Image 1 (cartoon, rainbow, N blue to C red):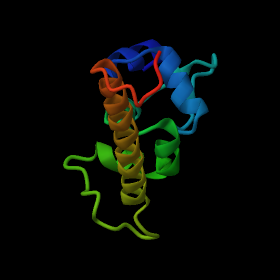
Image 2: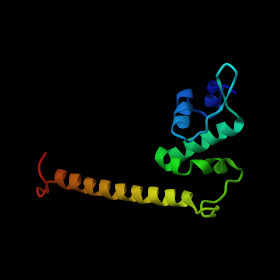
Image 3: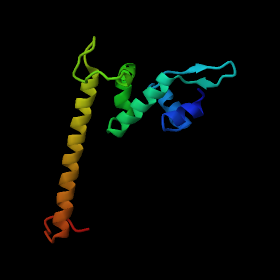
Length: 129
């Protein structure tokens, strides 16, 4: 299927497909003799996996670290994150790293919220705005 059809099937845009390809998340698709990209149903499923993982808070860089294994998540059922493939478990490492980053951001935002709440409640230990 051509890029517009593949994008529609994956609930995204042609621009996103080209972006994922450029960033190494999606392998370059086959080309027609006229040079048009031709996507397979497996490519569409991979894009859905990419979009789902991005929606969960993983970054493009996180996914680049495990790009060679993204196709596994399109399997039905997908393998568990804790099951170690040959060569280690980069997937779990990526998730652990992202969880730590989210925890640090939550801590930072909570402290910022507390400072702002103290300021608005009349506690003048904080600098005024």
